[in-house]
Length: 235
Ligand code: GLP
Image 1: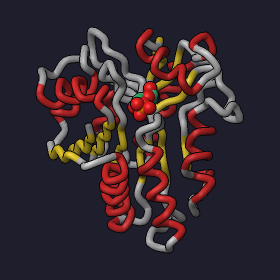
Image 2: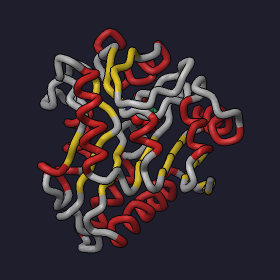
Image 3: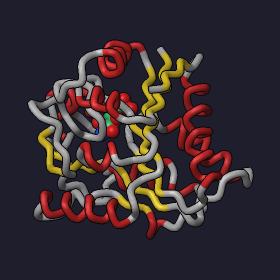
């Protein structure tokens, strides 16, 4: 595991974007695993800048996102599909038909999970997976549990996650209680994993994830078992 301390959020964003850009330069047909949350916004801004300045071409890139709220239409401005369009896809030369987010509207979310995993498999997996981290150690929406869930699956969000994500909604009651998330298989099969964390409130969980025991009680700790992980943090 490569652990990099950035001087501040801008440096974290630049370093993260450079790592993603190197993957794209190396293979313009790469499959990028992308994440939502406030942490990657700066990284996406950097990628947009590089694209606008002509240094980075997304025309042949495919993306798969980690997760989506259950029951939110893609046109809902709180959906993760909307977030991705708004914070990245609308501003770069990517073919939106090659950008994928789990379908939170599927009537059978476990069938949707199986379809999503088979789809990622058919792409040959992801070349890089970008991750943020929740205060309880969740990656995607893999919440602390008794086991690591392998498949893309439906989850019931923890009270802590609902509280943390309420800042994007009108109030806590408006936060969906359920979501669909890539499981550990889809995350861990990625050739490269990049985890970014910003802020003092993430210090404790980042330390526990990278130095503590590997346990499903701290979902991000599973990353210690992957051979190519970079963690960039600032706090
Ligand atoms: C959400 C997302 C996660 C993300 C987390 C942290 O719960 N599902 O993928 O890592 O938020 O978000 P933030 O970066 O805003 O702290």
